[in-house]
Every structure is written in structure tokens, then in C-alpha cells.
Length: 294
Image (tube, rainbow, N blue to C red):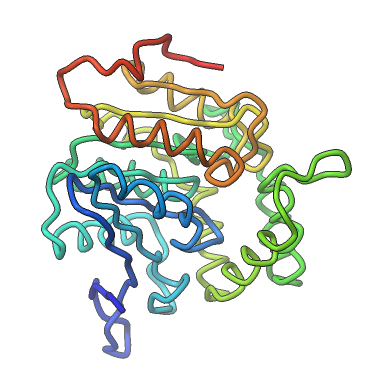
């Protein structure tokens, strides 16, 4: 298996990130959402390398097959982990793709490390620019919502994760866009994560303000969000990110839930391939359309 060392813990043990590296061509780095791991990208990993793209997906520290240290789940450290991945693999002309919590890593990397090695960025169902409702962020999510998440994780992590998976994909009595098998697979992926990492990362994506990081982004940017996202509401995230990055391509998937990497996998793959293959400075027919698409 492939691992990249990103540091050491307080006991001196190596902290290593597991990664997959498939295909050849310009690199696309996929950063997974919470509380899953890089296996959530199965349908992208099976398709994007067919299109002359080198696709790398790694498990965030604390998740999947990566090391599970006690700490280091703040966005500065996670952005430094991402830098170690890009540096160790010596990647250039990278398209960074961050889903949900992973969008925060993309933003913080661009702000903290000046976008080194990166040619383009994509925010998919992203938590940017700032999830928490405050006086200067009135469109954010109430603190009580995050308090409930933390309380339920501490009380019954397995039960919370099973219920959360249904919201993640918009499952209800009238709509069941994913199989029970897929939900069960996601539960197994999420439950393998460190309990501490699951808690700390939930706090990080709820409380971290990425507004200043977004001002540092000066590369072509793609924003994709589902209008039916109940996990990261589009009003607090996709719309605000698009306002902060007015030159970005902003695509709204009408009615799509948070987990659109699965429910809208064919469309997402097409949009990611078109974006990653687009030569900067040239005209891309796939994106000759209005900035907001429904």
C-alpha cells in the first residue's frame, strides 16, 4: 500500500497518509468529505483516469487507512498534510478537488501555502466560506446544530453515523436515491475513523472561517453544489463561495443532496473531467454558459 509521511506524533511515531494514485496525465487530487475516507471517490477513481488524468485520492489523518494520531485536526495542520502529499509526489499543474470538509482544506492550502503547485481548484458541496452563523455571517448555520452533532457523536457515534448517512444522500420516506448496501458501506467507512478525529474535524469545519483564504485564490475555480443539500445548505455555502469568487464557474445541481458525488456521479464526472482538461486561457465549450446553472 502507498503511504506518505506527514510528521510525527507526540510519542515520536510517524504519521502517514494512505493514498491511491491512478492513471497518467495532469494530476487531479481528490480530498474527501467528513466523516468518510478516500473510498467515497470510487466512482471518480474508476472514470477520471480513463481521460488522460492522473488521479490521487488520500485518506485524511484519523480516517481510513491513514494514521490516527490524537491531535492535528485543525485546518492549518490538514493544509500542511495536503502540502506534504503534493511535495512528496512532486505534483505540478494540479487540479485540487475538495468535497464538503475537503473544500476547507483546498481553501486553507491556497491561503496558507500560496497555491503552490496548483493550477485549478474545485469546491464540491463545500463548507466554505464559513459555516457558523455569526453577526457578520448571518446566512450561516446556528450553533445549536453543531452542538447537537457533537452531543450525538459523543453519546452514540454509530447511531449518529447511520442517521447522518440518510441525510447525506437525501433519503426519506418518498425518496431513496441510494441502496441500503451503499449506506452500509459508508457506515463502515465512517466508523473505521478515529472517534477523536471525527469529533475534532466536525468542530473544525463548523468553526473555521475561510473567507480570507478565498481572497487568495487566483486560479480557475469550479463550484458545484446541490440545491437540495440539507447537510451543508447552499445558502450558507455554495452561494456565498460563488459571491466571494465571482470569476468562478458556479454550477447548481437542481435538487441534488450533499452526497452528489454518488447520486449525480455521471454528471459530476463529466464536469470534473471538462474542468481538469480545460487549458487555462483557452475557451472550454463545456463552460460556455451562465455563471449559475440549474
